[in-house]
Amino acid sequence: MQEITRNRILFATGSLWALPVTLFGLIVGVLLIPFGARLSVSDSALVFSGFRVFGSGALTLGQVILNARPDLEDLVLTYDCAANGGVECVRLGTHEKAHVYQYMALGVFFPLLYFLHGGISHKNRFEQAADRYALTGQGWWPYPRK
Image (cartoon, rainbow, N blue to C red; front, side, top):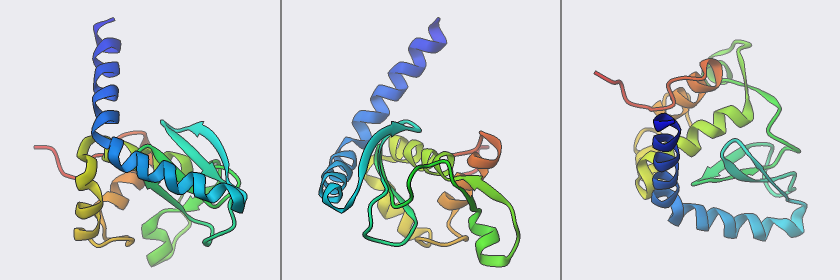
């Protein structure tokens, strides 16, 4: 019982810490509704899916996932396979859920750290951690634990 209470407190605290970016994501998501976006809840986030504005990718902003695909169930290549060849795939929603957790831990500092680590790249430790989490269910934190 204590574990459940502890997890709820951590989730609520992380949600508050990520709230400024979540609100921005919510505004962007609402602006995407005229372009076909549909709202749902999945992977610890509000999800706006199916809009026709940019490519077929997904972007996490706090606890909001902007997903150009119809839903988060698609299997996508890991960043490493996309860059270097290979066939290892992950569920898109699980990859994005790792970014939700990263936002909940780092709050408004996440975007800065993300771009300092290389932005959208297979070399970015945040993307590596998200792929690891999507593959194993563990390891969403991008820094080694000692």
